[in-house]
Amino acid sequence: MQWLSERWYRRSLLARLLWPLSLLYRSVIFLRRISFQTGLMQQKTLPVPVIIVGNITVGGAGKSPLVIWLAKQLHMAGYSPGIISRGYGGSGPFPFAVQVTSQAEQCGDEPLMIHQHSGYPVVVDPDRCRAGQYLLAQHPCDVIIADDGLQHYRLARDIEIVVIDGARTFGNHLLLPAGPLREPIDRLKTVDFLVCNSGDYPEAFRMDLNASIAINLLSDASKSLSSFTEQPLHAVAGIGHPQRFFQMLKAAGLSFDEHAFADHHTYQPADLTFSDTRPILMTEKDAVKCRSFASADMWYVPVEAELPMLLKDTICEKLRNLNHG
Image 1 (tube, one colour):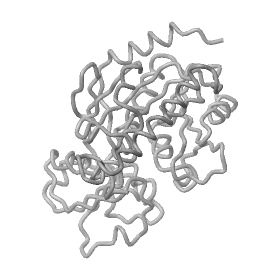
Image 2: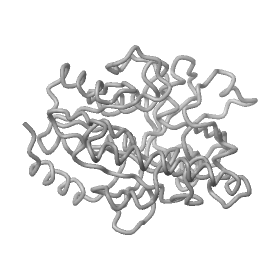
Image 3: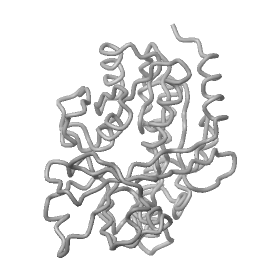
Image 4: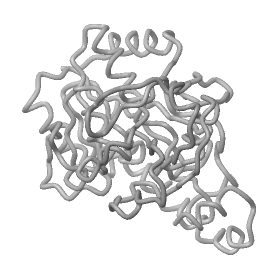
């Protein structure tokens, strides 16, 4: 998959060969979307507003930090948010209410990270409609944030937010399997808000991911990132775009060997066994899968999303103007 992904971000011979399949894929997603819009296929409407945070490309664009930021902002505005997710890689049973002590193998790494980081209720189910119903039955939520699910049209939504990778944008601009696009770029014209992660895009709110500390996987002790500048390190990332994590560490003045893994990689102790005892820095998403065999030299780097308050204010205004129930 990593090999194919690399070719999605340039006009490769493979992309040209796969282009006819992209045309077929485009026809399928067009017909599916029209079927829901015309009522030929029925959408499920939940009794509270639903906010979709998704993207139109395969791979990580920064949705999870935005979901955490949005949940916190809505909570401070007086709402009681809950979060639903497909739970990629999780085995269930579904619907699955994520707990602090849950395992990534049960619910997926991103939902577990979101719950551990934010404390807000998270329910996982490949059927996002069922996830939302279960969440509302268990928690007094008055707004639901769906992590991913832009293309899950069976779940009716009130607000759509699309996250754009500011570094890679849309690659070769081709749809699957010739390129990274899940939907055509003109889909962006139909959503409510665009957010560009670590970059600028027309009419998009800019999101920057900031990191200042590292937290030990064993003791939960924290240290400033600057305290690691005087020593060589190992940096580990199993996310959609590992280079974003490595570039963030370089910007903090750190020196390290890079160890990139596939997105959602299931770590084994051997993956983090190196020939020396240098400290290991990893993403928060990686950490939830490594705690069971963590050593004292393993640290994760949490990030905080920074966005204009105008986005929060505009979303809250839109929520107030909705008519639910």
